[in-house]
Each structure stands twice: as C-alpha cells, then as structure tokens.
Length: 240
Image (cartoon, rainbow, N blue to C red; front, side, top):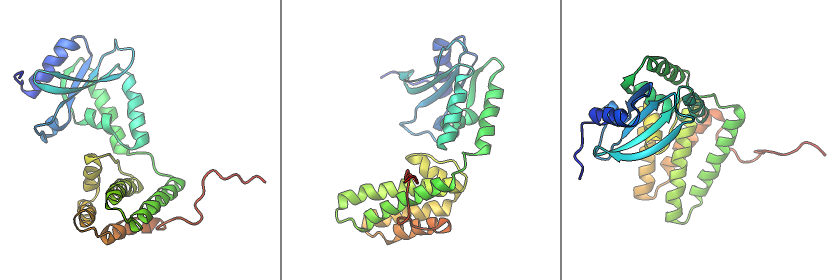
C-alpha cells in the first residue's frame, strides 16, 4: 500500500505535479474542519485560467482519495449560482472554509464572493412552493399512517426525514443539504429540534411507533397551514 503523506503536503504535491501553472488552489472538507475520519478524502479546488471549462475528477494519489474540483477564473460563478438556487452551497462552503495551497493574488476575492453568498442565504421559497411542499409532506404522512408493510415504511420514513428537514430549513431561510449534511444543517439551525427529529425517527425504527414522527411533522407545518390535500392544484387551465 502506498505510504500516506500528511494531508497538506499531499495536497500541495498534487497541485505542484498536476497544476503547476494554476492561479490558485485550496484544500477544503473534513480535513480542514478537524473532522477527519478514516474514510475522509482531500477536497481540492483549483482555479486555472487555461481551463476551457470546469470539471470534477476522483483520484487516488499519495495514499489519499482526492476529489478534484477544477475551474477557470469565471466558471466557478455558475456553480455558486446553481448552489444558491438549490440551497445546497457545496462549492461556496468549500471555498469559504478552505486552506490556501497556492495563490497568485486571486483567491481573496473568490473567497469573499463565497462568504458573501453564504451570508445572503438561499433564495426565499414562494408561497406556491411552500404549498407544494406541504402537499408532498401530507402525501408522505398519509402513506406512513396507512402503511402495512414494514419494508415500505422504512423508505417512507426516510423520505419524510428528508422532506421535513428541507421544509424547516427553507422556510427559515437557511441552507439545506442531503444525507449527513441535512442533519448537520438542521442541527446548526436548531440543535434541540434536530434531536427531536432523530428521536421521532428512532421511535419508528426501533418500536414501529409513528406518533412522534407524525406529530413532529404536523407541528413544523402548522405555522404554514398544516397538512394540505383538498384544494391543491397545479397546471390547471382556467380556460373553458
């Protein structure tokens, strides 16, 4: 097995070998946050004006799994905008929290753009979007309440967990995420609320009890009108 270099040394060596003429490069992710585990990789973002377009690539070098995000000096902005539209600020967060590996005088401005975007938050949900999300949550709750199949119930409850995390965060103007990032985002917003959701899910997973989860979702939707089924409509033409 290839010996593993220290993370910063590995990242700097990678940049020296593969992008010797780039304008800037940063190291992000769990290594930088001090949250590294045995399966952590090196998230490296490169800014190279010679690149025609951005790309992502996964490699293994110097004993590390490396996730490379390569951009020129303008392409990253489209990804910043996409991340804001979907309320999942992957690239802005990486750039804002990163450690600089190389800089020719451009990274400070790019980091400032990332931090400004994070501070502004995601686009606000419209009333129409909130209504649609209430409908989806109501549908998922109805599926769980009527579920007679444990295997199906596990998937339904997982969907409810994702949907209600998104609903709480977005209706509070906060960034969201997927998988572990959904829980982390909810915990940053309200740690007690995150624990309550976990407890409600555990009640179903361990004891097949749905009451806590149903109550949690109902309480989260209540300020916005609660469950929604009758009267929900999309795409209907008013023409006769």
